[in-house]
Image 1 (cartoon, rainbow, N blue to C red):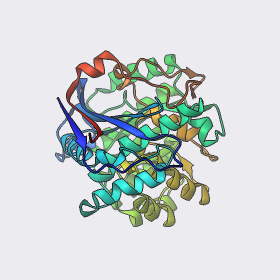
Image 2 (image 1 turned 135 degrees about the horizontal axis):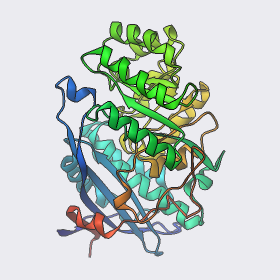
Image 3 (image 1 turned 180 degrees about the horizontal axis):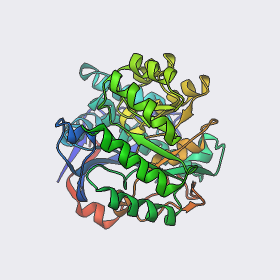
Length: 390
């Protein structure tokens, strides 16, 4: 653990309401109960997932306000994200925390030679999310209310119970448990080398759920265009809510062709790390459900820009992962929304999000409405504090 001082920190301007005085960064490693696998593992492109690395940013101001935000990596990249965040954290010291867009631009330019997508923006996300949390806490409002909520709850589907590493019998047990908990939709993974096995598993889950309960599938980019079109047609009979990432996430043309050919909606976008990459999908009509991830695209500031673009095309919104953040953003979207449920992060936060009749309720706590537990502190592998010079 180390403490550093920001060099040449900008002074507080005379008109500023407040100023950032301290930034704490933590690298936290969350272990999973058991290794999990999706189609990327079965095709040999990745190893089973055993832990998630989190970059937490805790920002404090001279006025006594605090905000917390995070970024994450499900495989390689966590230490690199943490290292980049340490390099640029000093840029926040002395800034007015209300000037979030200005600060976002400043952080991007601080690491401009590394680009404006990928690891650099994911490191910025932790700061940006913390600043929005702080701003909402200052206002005494849940973030959804600060942004302007269209609803006080969001339809919620579960993903964590549907991985390919679980046999179909376990999947069905997980589905039953999710329904008892109040989940409003179920997503399972597909994309196995044997497509007949995919169809068999989907048929079993559809039979278990009944004909009308919302069911989604996710191929995690492991089909080529021809396979996606053929399997997409065979999956039509299951009345799916969507088919997710049927082809490579950067293949906007392939997604667009599939979306035009199928009755089943197409969803994609979770792997993208910038507004411009999402715009490429949106402008080509490549998906019916856009799936941005605030920690991946650089935080809430760019996420709001993606929401505006999606709303312009009247698309539906289904943010990826991080329900603790995305619940507020989905509640503030004017169109159709879904929220992805993962219980994996629950040990890190004192608070719990509530489910009711298939929907997740927006909490009435100020800001994002979560705080870190002692367990999260115990999983911290490194921590650094950045303050003003002198």
